[in-house]
Length: 381
Image (cartoon, rainbow, N blue to C red):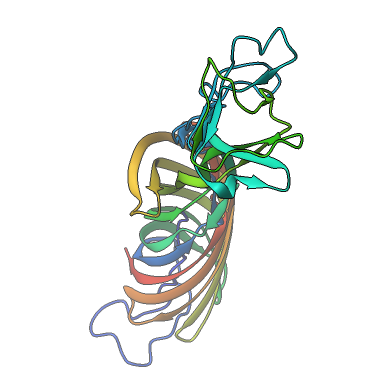
């Protein structure tokens, strides 16, 4: 924050009695003190913040689903087995393994299963899943410019050099309190799982055999028409049976505040003519910044298109006090009201370093350099 402006004061005035209206700002014959109090509008160079995020893709969870071949009842296509389908069966008979794989121990339920010399069966209870996942992590860095109205006071010793020119020294103090806040999102993610049933179709080559009319059921003892115990072809269909979706995003709220005391010391020069006084000064400053920052983060999750709800949260904070040396330059213009009182306005620039800020893994900086304008009332004594 900066310290303030030189408030020009009356120069020449009658030694006693009522001050005439035609009083002018000529320099007094001897040195004197004056004190100025007022307010300034002060803008700091900038607040820069890079938030770290606790939200990660691994925190968005969905069920694993089921993946199973489901061929226990129909057996492996390349091995002899007792096979039970939803619309029939093909089982072993006493000579299947020893005599080349044929069996009369089979049956089917519907005539539509016979087609172009093949007999088809349907069965199995397999399951399968497919999973998709996507996530985005953004830097989220942002900047703002803290500013506020700040009170100030300064004390000057003024020594006249001639009728119109004064030289002096000033010491000043100002106080600023400011805060900035921002909310945003740096993370989003989505996951989805689609569940499938697996339904198998086994096709058996009838080899010229004309099957009995449906429904037909052969037996272990036979005899009956023979077909191979091994399907000529096995295919699978994957109808969707269900699934799950989830999406997530985070919300980061950052709240920063600073109390800034600025002490200034330096020489000043002032030119007076009539009621008007124009001044300039420059010197050294010490800025004492007492800062704090708090960052909160919440992770929100929506499941199967429902309302997003807060799943998890984190909070990080940091604070500190830093004393930063710097320089200032300022110019002022004033109007003399009486021998003792005057008004002035000023513009000023403070040059100072940066304050480094941290809160957890987040970090940033506060630039103390900046412009200020203000005005005040000066009393000479």
